[in-house]
Length: 117
Image (cartoon, rainbow, N blue to C red; front, side, top):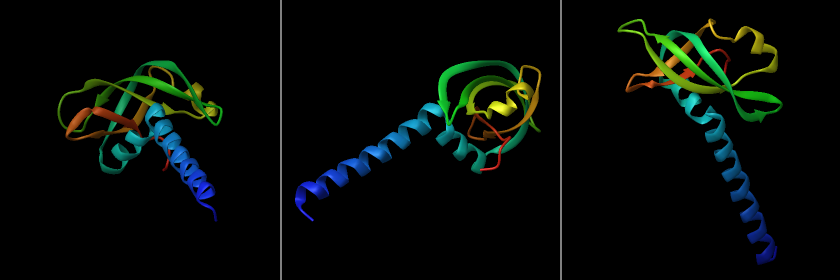
């Protein structure tokens, strides 16, 4: 292969990887995946939801204000966002109680634990 072709393939690969990384940060999914792997299980009540204006595969990224109830310690409020299936939107409204995981080092970092990774 010629050097310009190799350079173009390199630039394309770096661009794709960068776009995937950016998408993970915008949707919150990169952080949520980490929290779900290492976090502590709890229940949370949805206090408020909002549209972030982002969609992934026609599913909205939804912002959440949650009242987290850990097994130990007092309850607290935290915000997060998650990609929610369009089919699940009616069930995930204010008042719904959902499983979550939170970062034991920083309990304000919370991820919904409603889908299997």
